[in-house]
Amino acid sequence: VVSHTPLETQKLDQLLKNGNWTDLVRAHIPHETKLYSWWSYRARDWDLSDRGRRLDHIWATPDIARTSRSCDVVRAARGWGKKPSDHVPVIITLD
Picture 1: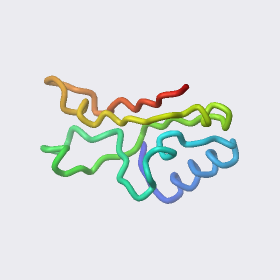
Picture 2: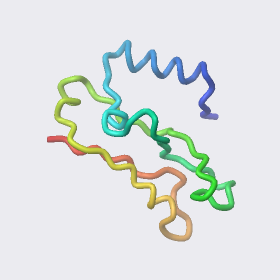
Picture 3: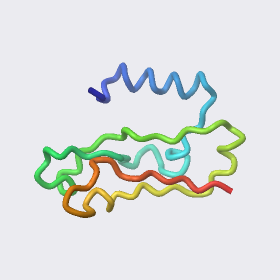
Picture 4: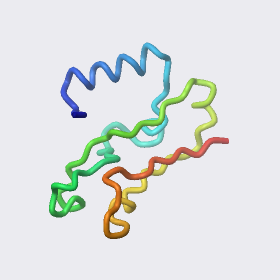
């Protein structure tokens, strides 16, 4: 089960820092902004309740991070079709 306990968040942050990775999504979306890439099927109205999790990440080395130009979390995809994925595409554009 994937969750966001303080310990899990701390360990993920340690991996990011110790590996000298750049979180490309957060490089484009401020930390103060809610950022989800997954919403449960259990919610009757996932969009209204807006209680998701950020399970999908794109990290890069500093050299690649410098080429990052934009980010799109395709939230609308969660509502596409009769049985959409509970994850949405996370897209980074590089030079």
